[in-house]
Amino acid sequence: MDLSLLSRQERLEIELSLLFTENGFNRIKLSQFDEYELFHQHRAFLSGEQMLTFTDPRGKLYALRPDVTLSVLKQAAYQPEDCIKVYYKEDVFRMSAETHSYEAGRQIGIERIEKKNPSQESSVLMLAQKALMLLPVDTVLVLSHMDFLDRNEWFHSLREEDQIDVLHLISRKNRSDLEKFLTRKACPSEDYEELLKVLDLVGSPDSIEEKLESLIQYPDLFSACLELIALSRMLPADDHHRIMIDFSLVNSLNYYNGLIFQGFAEGCRDYVLSGGRYDRLARQFMPDKESCGAIGFALSLDVLEPIVGDTL
Amino acid sequence: MITIALPKGRLGDKVYHLLDQAGYGFTAMEDVGRKLVIDDQEKQIRYLLVKPVDVAVYVEKGVADIGVCGKDIIEESGADVFELLDLGFGRCSMAVAAPEGFQENPRKRLRVATKFENIAREYYSKRGRDAEFIHLNGSIELAPVLGLTDVIVDIVETGTTLKENHLTVIDRFMDISARLIVNRSSYRFKEKEISTLVDRLKEEISID
Image (cartoon, rainbow over all chains, first blue to last red; front, side, top):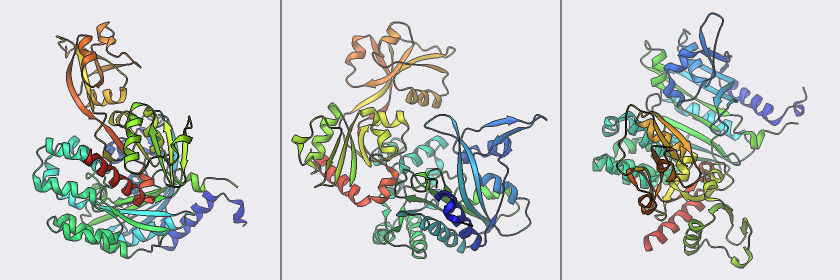
């Protein structure tokens, strides 16, 4: 077979498939649509994604899949294996914020669901970094951790919409408005300091290590930093494929916990890879497996278009 | 090279002055003329001169690494960018205003005139208030005066225009000022250059 006949995107898809297969992940094929109820029940996980729905001849409501993880979990819940390692290449159908119309976007990613164990993170992160290294440009893998926020009692005492505002301000690195918000909500001084400290925790693992001493009074943040530094040291990296720690990378606590990460490729305006640990979501599908841990990531091929989008 | 989107007009003049003080002014100012793209090879900076309302779009799409625009522009556009610095000038508020003596009827759908439809929608949606939005591009204050709407959602600085049109502020709900915004991906690849620029601007702001 003459591989030169393939487009760069097609070659990348093959290279990623090989990478995932070599690491023990089996291809899973999903239907392009699923019961509307599945997505509706977990709407918060989908960050309010609009869905393209239709009714089948028997009156049952379906939706074109806005996300792959939920469909994978639905299948996983019926599988007897203790360790599920799958990869997928699927289209997702989402409303574009720019054009206000529905668009299909191609994703390729993995999900690993098994009894929670310490090697899950390092092995999945290793794959994420190797996937980024297949790209023909410089890349940065950004690591973050949600547990310090998950353990913050003041944060949990807030109404859900206020929690969303805090996450939004942190994710924008918006110090001035975060200060005002925390003051307005009478945030206790220790939590106030910790939440603002988060915005300073950005840089290479070495630079974060230098800041560790200033974090001793915040044990949850301190241990999260230690965990991320240890993980980053296990990953291959060089001047063209860097690792960065940035605690402003946050996500909904309803579903995610622990490690979250994003990958960036030079020349692409947004993150090209996104992933993290989602034990809470997985346990909703597998309530009998309390110790179940789930972690995965996906690459968005449409975001990669500027660097691999040309055809023959 | 860092690409900076500068807003044209009054805000842009202030931003340029601040950047100049921080050591990021154009090396050859006399050559600028009516150019919209200015490359400063010596400082390794490219400046884009764009309409203030478009700054957030240029930055979000990664055409510019950095930009300066008002908080109102960021919120209305919904641009997903980092907001690294509040520059402290261009201060005003986003507010709901109505004719003096206005009594809201909760059983009626509220009619709202605004140039900032997304911000207004978000405001009333958070409060669960049924509202109809009428998009106007200017002289928003006229809408309730002529009975087109009940209230307006608009930028309020001193409140003089409102007063002259017999309107009064009901709720100031958003503080607005000029913000330094950064593309999320650019930040990952140009973190050092961007952090240096931010630190220098912070120094200048604290001196002022």
